[in-house]
Length: 255
Image 1 (tube, rainbow, N blue to C red):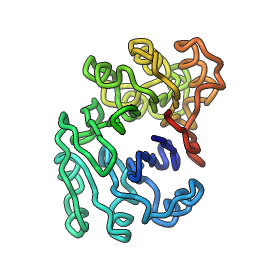
Image 2: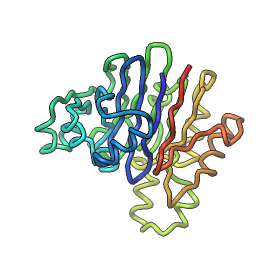
Image 3: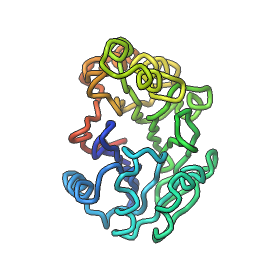
Image 4: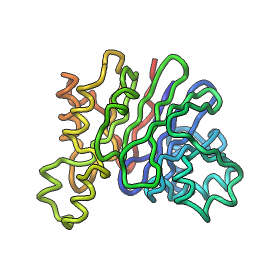
């Protein structure tokens, strides 16, 4: 099982997960041409994908999802609330399936466990991907953590974890007060300290990879995100991968 990012941040998000002969794309926040180019950097073509799984309807996660799915005849998996929020855009899709927030589903060789998260979207979800033996947990676009989130992400072999902002940088930054309140609120985004506290609450004995994702280019730095997660794991900061906006990150193998 392995995974890679096409890019992560407010300008676009997409993550590829592969198990056996199946590859799925989590979110598609880039336009068609850019998505194709970013896939090529990973040695993939659109025809290598089995489906697109959507976390929520914000543009940085779905900007290219529908036209990409339509052009390459890919099924779309999303919650009912997300589908309703995208009403008018989903009608001409080749195929779409509704995700129930607490019910596992499978796409080819990949088992996927959705779970709800607090975010200012219609029915947002995040996911744990598994090949039956190994687990990749993904959590971004969540304003806070919950006991259920902790339970779902416990004992993962790899984690992609939001470190959106540094609290002090956001407070002193140039964003207007309303936007600062939205980002730091309970339906906004996790900051470095929130992510570190969540990681500290998990059983990390099996953890092979930790990735800081959705890192703000204005209100955070890769160094601060790495330091926050590295301190919890008592590891060198360099062991923490940062998913950047331009190139995401290359393949990470889960053994």
